[in-house]
Image (cartoon, one colour):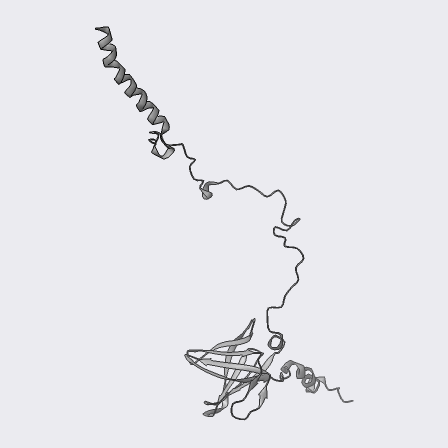
Length: 201
């Protein structure tokens, strides 16, 4: 009776051993995942990170140091150093004399010209004068590229571009003589006034 019972239980014990051996031989990806996931650290919110005062004042030590640096000119020198310009274009014909915040705009229809208040802007390629003409944007752009008049063949040291509203025309430009200031002649006029004449005896 005991022998029969042992023979009946022996296959069950062997089967249990084989199942455990098979579990040990499984590859890592064949093994079941743990029921409890690994603990992860929560993401850091940069807005909640406390600010730390710098150890050194920026007045004593520069915040950014990139070695020795030299100033580099970012504006085109030819137009930057010119205070007044004469610009002209063909088809349709136009001429602009610009200096001291005023652009005198002339056309064949208005040869006397019209003065337009403009602001001068300097940028890497040249200068631009911006204003308003009859409610439309007015801008005269001048750069240091050489220019040749397409009708006369005359050469100019600068190139101009005129924009009025949505219409743009190109032309040539050159430096202009700056008119002497009115204040320069004021002292001479004051000397000729009756109050400055010596009294006769």
